[in-house]
Amino acid sequence: MISSVLPTYSRAPMQFTKGEGAWLIEADGRRFLDMGAGIAVNVLGHANPVLVQALTQQAQNLWHVSNLYNITQQQALADKLVAATFADTVFFTNSGTESCELAVKMARKYWYEKGEKERVEIITFEGSFHGRSSAGIAAAGSEKMIKGFGPILPGFVHLAWNDHDALEAAISSKTAAILIEPVQGEGGIRPVPTQCLQGLRALCNKHGILLILDEVQCGVGRTGKLFAHEWAEITPDIMMVAKGIGGGFPLGAVLATENAASGMTAGTHGSTYGGNPLGCAVGCAVMDAVNTPEFLDNVIQKAAQLRQGIANLIYRHPDVFTGQRGLGLMIGIQCKVSNLEVVKAAYDACLLTVPAGDNVVRLLPPLNLTNDDIAHAVAKLDQAAATLK
Ligand SMILES: *Cc1c(COP(=O)(O)O)cnc(C)c1O
Image 1 (cartoon, helix red, strand yellow):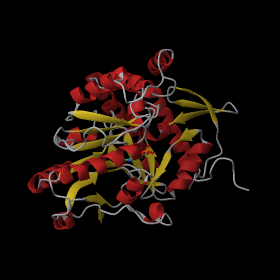
Image 2: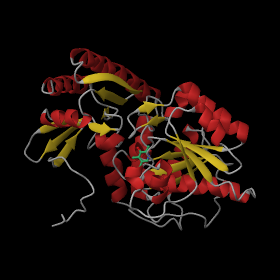
Image 3: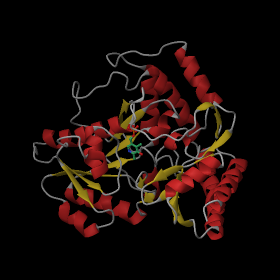
């Protein structure tokens, strides 16, 4: 008999009842260190008092009003994002995949309004992930995500991850945009090298096409910059955001330059909940906490510490781990044994990690984890690895 919850996830047998900082407490009382943070969502940890305060204070005043009216908290968060980034304008969504939908619509509308109605193609890359909506699965294009779901949204060109020549050859008079994650998340924590991001920007400039960055997983302080593309000193035309921006409250956004957004006039897009007062009040508190030099420097320091601990682990367990990669607190440990076995062994040691593509175990901890949390995570991974030889 089918479970009352649609069985699209194979769930681990844990059920958490409370969170505190980087820790989750299971119904039976066990304490798990959360190095997954709801897949890069809980950037300030669980039950962060500042976010609890922002949410409860807003909840006492106003939960929802329609986008037919001006929403104070939405305006405030848009102003913060515009001040902190390349963007001139922001549309709020409730998730990453909704941000993908708008990014694709925006890029196509841009060319439509310029009279180039054939320019609908968006170039994407193997191993990418852009969410589970129709545009999201069409963009990623993997068999696993699209098979059985009928006609796929047309207009995506899928290229190999690292093939510069193929990229240049794929650009045509039909190309509207290139869409890429600066650090591929689900695909196995694969950072796009700085010179490749710069090359992509240059290529887009040369052909006059739009660069869309999917920073749903790597954005909001995760890599030690507010957004990961800042490491390459480039800017996109359109950027997708979600996950960390709400710190655990469902919130997403599409950021764009005035030029890229020029086709999106009144009536061309909308959302009932997108930009609601609750989400945006929390988003403002997240931005205030994350977007300071001290906070971002601390992410870089914590990442260095964690990376060093992992380097030790790899040295101690060459039969289990083969290497690590990533940027900031977005870390992938490449495994010799099955990554699922490592994740399972870590569960048994009360440590939460997340599997990713390319046989990688992902660590995406809360960005404010403590030194003790880092030491604990490394010790538990050591314990887990010891069970796998
Ligand atoms: C998680 C993710 C998405 C989809 O976000 P949802 O909120 O699950 O819709 C899109 N892109 C990237 C890079 C992601 O990591």
